Every structure is written in C-alpha cells, then in structure tokens.
Length: 446
Image (cartoon, rainbow, N blue to C red; front, side, top):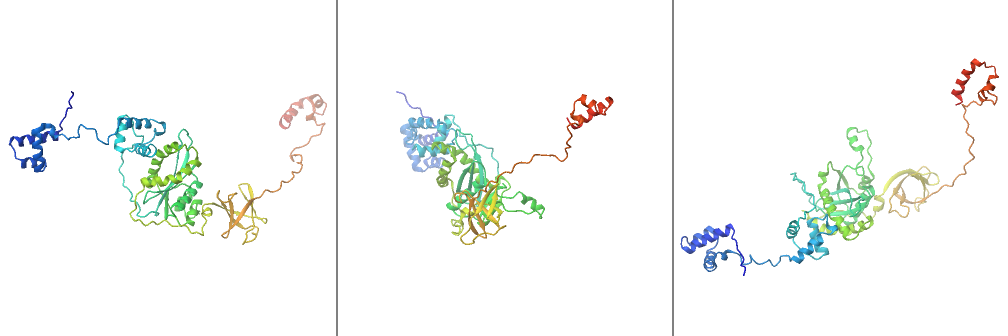
C-alpha cells in the first residue's frame, strides 16, 4: 500500500526541534512556549502528540485532504470550455467572473479563477501599462457638483469593424454613469440627447468638465484672451447650458478628466461582450440596452460620496427640454411669413396669441428631431410657432435668346478671308501680299 509522504516546512522543523528538546528535558515548557510564541497548554499538547505520532503531529490534519470548497475537475473543464468561446476572447478576468455568475450560475472567487486560467496559459487581455506615479485629485464631496463629459469612438460590435461614438457623463463624487448614448460619430446631437437623459435620470448638475472640442467651446475664445476686440459667441451646447445655469469648465488635457477616460477603458472591454451575448448589432438596440445597463454598472462600480445630500437640481416644469436642446438659428421672414434654411423654404404659421408676424421680423429657428414631425419650430419673443414646408410655384422658363457677342465682327460673305486662295488672288492683293493675308487668317479665324 502506497503511503503519503509528509514534508515539513522550516517553521515546523524548528517547532519539532524545540518540542523534542522539551521532551528530553533540556528546556522547560515555559521556555519552549516563550521561544515558539505559544501558550503553555499548546506546548503540553504538542509534547504529548509528538511522543505518540512523531513528526506527523505537527502537520495539520487536513493537509492531505482536498478542501471542501475546491473546484471539481468537471467544473474546471466546464469553465475552460466556456472561456474558449470566441465571445470571451477579449474579456478580462473580472468581467468573465461576473458573466459566469450571471449567465452560467457559476460562482467562483477571482483568485481561484485567475489561478485556473493562468495555469492554462490564458492571460488577461487588459492593458498593462508601466506604473507612472501621479497626484490624484480628490473627489468632490457631493453628487451633482461636477460631471465629466466625453465621447469615444470604438468598434463596439464583434465581427464588425464599423466605428461608433459613445457619448457619456460620469459624476465626479460618486463615479456614477448618468447616461450613455451611441451615435455614428461625436456630434452635438449625441451630447444633447445624452445630457437630456442625465437630467431625466438624476437632475441638472452644477457644472460640467469637458475637453476643448468646438462643440463645447468656441475656437475664438483663446484668441479673445489676447485680443479683447474679438467677439466670442456661445456654441449651441453653451447656449443650452446657459439656459440651465450650468457652468462649462474646459479641461487642458485628457489626464485632467481621468475619471471618464478610465470609464472608456472599462466599457471598451465589457460592452462588446455584453452586446455579443445579447445579439445586439445596431445602434438602436445598443441604446435601448444602455438605458438600463448603467444602473447595473453603477451598482458595481459607484462609491458613496462624502456628503450624502445631492445637489442635482430638478428642472423647472415650465422649461421644455426639447426646446432647450435645439439648434438655434436666426432668420428673417418676408411679408408672407416665409424664411429659408439650407436652400429650403418654410412658412411660419399664425400663432394663437401673437397673430401674424410682420415682414422683416427676426425669428429664432429651433431644430430638433424631437420637435414634432418636421423637427422645426419658430420662436419670437418667447412665443413658439409651428412651421410647415413651403414649396413655391415653378415659373415658366422664357425662350432663351440666341447668344451674341458684342465684340465679334460679322464679316461679309465676299470677304477675302472667307474665300479660297484662288478667289483671293483675284483681289487687289498682289501675290507678294499673300503671306500677310495668311498671318491675319491664322490670328483671327483659326
């Protein structure tokens, strides 16, 4: 019968030597207890067991037994088989552990999973950068004091190389993602829609922290700091923030808004896997999923603020957010209430309160896909007017006049330049003058 071999470590060897000296009478129980850091009772117990079982008494009784919570070989094989699926190829270990619990009802600690996968030669695909010490900026104490805004383009759908931009906002105090919205590229509509979702979910923040993209900040603002004569107008996003009393703070580097930059790294690792598990392949499906995913994400990654009282503000019921988050353009109408935009003509309908607008009235045109069927409204002195498409009648084109040039001299039919050489020789030109006539023909007729 094969016997198990027990190997003592250095600590156990020292303890065995001290107990043997105690059993031999070279040292007392008190001296052994003090040297080993054990109680007198523990030394007495070890003396008795070493006499009876020898060195095996110093080995824990469960050393040769498999732990009760150890993974079975069948479960290990199942986890490795799941990991080999193409969906989980770019999934980091932490996310993979969460997906095992959510979709396969397998609960496993991170350390156990890490050891299992690394023993099989599987390396986490997470980015590993060289450690660079830097000073961390402290979080603000209350939720709603500052939101970090940004957009990131990425190939979110597995099997497709198409790039889509994800617009998002994260609270600086709690790390909560307030909204996510996907568009084809980084655009004003994406930020408008994302911010409107933030207000519906949490409220209006005090300030926002964004980069120096022209969506947030006019490029002339830096020039105006040098030359005060340069006029700087608010951007469309800036006008919306001004109406909501939200301050825009420009960041000078990506590291300054590192919280949302780190968010993109996490989402670029997780969302493609989440989309693939749910067969999400379009922007519409992705946006519908993101509306509820942010709450699951926040429950895992958000933190408690220092001060529990939030400063998010509820919007004024009198303010229609569809009008606030609209592109605003100035136009002048004619006597019929007609104005043009992008080579198209529109008519301002008569309002119920203001009546008909006079000619040469300057109006503000609001453009938003959510503003009714046409997506266009007109505003004058705070009053809104409906807008309809106006197609002018086509005019009949008059018959084109024959093109004539004032500088062209009409020669007579019997002009010598229009005759052949034999006819020209019959004129008063002599044979020696023929060369001059050819030069004139080349200059004016050819």
